[in-house]
Length: 391
Image 1 (cartoon, rainbow, N blue to C red):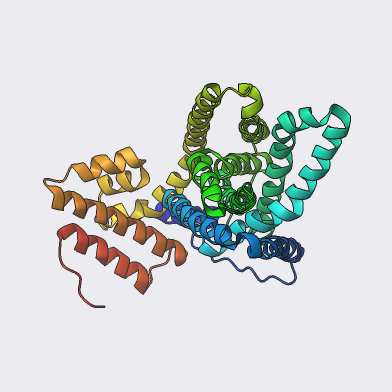
Image 2: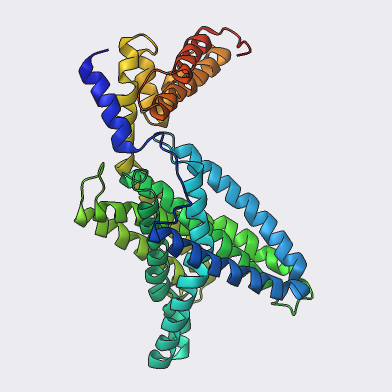
């Protein structure tokens, strides 16, 4: 292992913040108290709302909370899956989810939306406000409200949010919290559409619709917006790119605005509304994939620098390094090189073990520790197909 390779490994771990823990309780940090105050107020507002309606719509609330909870868990798992490089600690994504679910929604965006829509109604008329107000107001107030959560998290964890990809992942969790809380309230409002006579069935229509279209909603908007915000600000591991940052933030707002204005754009025609829905969802997903591909190369470079020296000492092969640092196509091609199904599965497990070596090295700051040595041993054991033995 050359001195240069070792230095690059240490620099990659330092620059990426990989392996660092997250401490939420920071009484000397003003950002902690701002977060705690606003989230607490949001929790109080949300719980008060649900408790006040539980007497009349308790069943609808229970069903929507459970279903949206499962739905959120699936998105949570997917977002964690794509964060396969310098992974964010669980604590920071939980804190991001909490801000999106409670502070960004009920303390910031709800108040701003109500005030702005009231002004539109007075200035331009109630019908115009109902048709176009949400498409003009919500993209600004809600994306900024979620983006403020990212700024607080940078203040709470400056050594963890270092790249635009970090902004993309944390932004997705900010949006996930916002979306789940908002969807529960939408379901609650639908439960009363028939005076509560058929509350569960009435709420379920909204639940299924929100689940179907949620793939291109707040999770996606805030992921793109927060990636842009990191580019706009610049971070130690991400050079400042003002133009790119503003473009991504504007794109997220534009997608949000078009989505909120679909009914007005379709002119009340159902066929045109559904067709526009499909087009907007496809375009939004394509943009999200593009932003992911734009931000992830720096993360892959960090992973390559951390694992590169392991090739020299024989822990991993050059092919394994390329595969673990590559995209899903590269990893799939590596697995398919196996001679049979069992061998392909073994090759996939080997890549997981190689990633574990990177995690262990990041946690140790690049030093050789018992955990690192064990992870290295596991790569060889899994590659050779030797059964595991108790530690």
